[in-house]
Image (cartoon, rainbow, N blue to C red; front, side, top):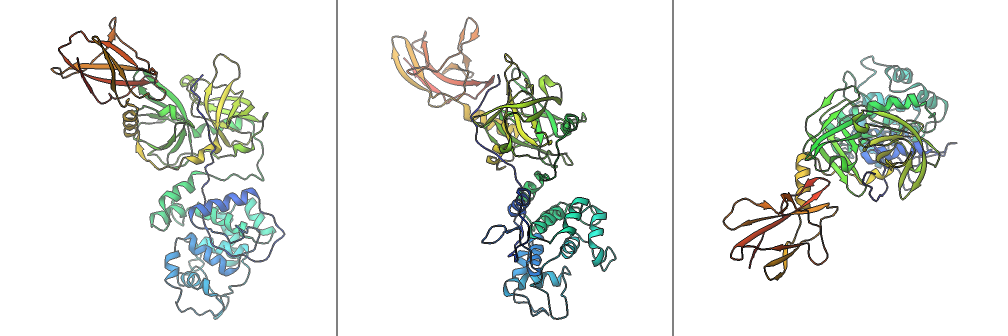
Length: 518
């Protein structure tokens, strides 16, 4: 069985932000999916909510929707500088003056008359769709669309799909609708460009690049309308699963990874990348990436790692909710056991214990870091271990445990491995006793060390030699009182000693030297 680790929980959720203070209660109840969209905008810095929470079931006023639009475009600072600007409208509340002035001066909104902005009027779906189209660079003045046909135009260019257009047309417009439409607009290409609106805003410095990257990493699934998929349909998720290969001292290490974002973010097991200096990433279409690999974050206890490659236009998975899994649920695993790339196996959740999923889907060496999908094709786990002596015994890490990884490193794989190796070098090598012509040595234990190697040289020698037994390096174990007892044959010599740790076939650098003489 592959090495198991203690677990904690995760969830990758990317969000965006609008500011609204919404009014009348609609005959509507916000769903979990609505909240996910609001969360995503909040994390991006575009949506704040009110002192009553998100208030997703309330209708936005025109003033509030204007504030939303300005914040979405990253123009909060500019709007504050316009709080005392002169505008022709007398009905704009003080808190909204800067927003209204910015939107008016930049042609994003107009008044309902020469002197009235219509600040307290409820926003309609058509009105808000016009706001989004203008944010994307489409205008009525250039003949892109007409106000009355804004929604049909948005549907024709793909901003609104048939379901969303029908939903907006059949009910009163709410904060939840505004959040969803803003979410879709930010992820939509601006006019005459392949650049998404949120990417354009990041490039202009109006939104944080780090937050934008996170926002794009996760796609919110339509929980309310989802349908169970056939196994063959879930198997098509292979394009989001990759084979990872790297060289270690005793040969080739293989594992799997799952694509989380279009711009190269991949999730795998920590034990797959541990100790690697470089890595090749093979995609489902057979193409191979052999460029620089970066470690974004990791948790050795959870056995999770986020890596990034310099490649665009990848196909990410849809993240599910592992907290919603139950024993008996159908799951599908995709990984590369023994290098057999993107093998698909079906099973069920056979147990949920200690924050890990026990599954009947086949898991073998090389499947580590692979994807576990639920019946809707959503990623709910990362496979990490299987029991070769048992039947139908596999294990996966729940995907909701991913929220502990915050992408704080961005360190090349070689730098990461070198730093990790330095951390593994044994510390505090000391002489604990001398007796006759023998010396007794001790050092601090290294976590998960399989054994230790001891090196020596005399003061006249430059290179260390390893202690051997019948010609083979002697493998020392850590003891409570001492870990090495050595006979010194030349009592007149002075020796320098150093020790290394070997963890899963990888040897650490040497400890600091200890000089010993009798």
